[in-house]
Image (cartoon, rainbow, N blue to C red; front, side, top):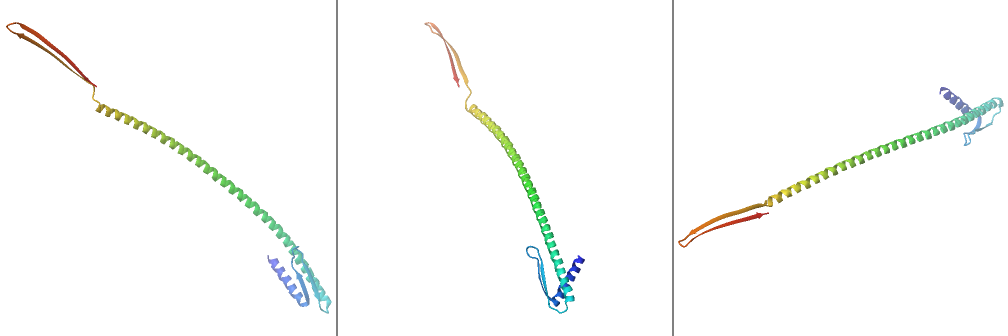
Length: 188
């Protein structure tokens, strides 16, 4: 990092000093990643200016190559990171789908268990209701029979038996008679 700052300061000072002696035009990185540079010299002393011009050209070429290399590295880095991001998102999507499926399966199992429990409770309730219904029917039948028995008199039989003997004596004669009666009454 420290070398990058030093390099930046040196290159900046070279460009700043070159603009005093020459009209320099530098074109930055274009869409294709190429850098071009040109310089015009307006002086009588060609040796210093020429070497300065050569230094500016060399610096511009190095900067251009550095920019191109940086662009290539950035493209590669960005491409790698984009691919990593897509893979990460794909993995997370797959995990989310698996978790969603697991939740669906668990809910389905719970739903089935709830259905089975409800069926079992319904069956038990029906059985208890049928047993209570049978018990109620039997109780009503027994109660009705008791009511009928209470209201219906028992069959009874009454019988009457009588015997009478009569004897009459008169001066003219005597007479004997007997009377026997049997009677039965039956109620139902």
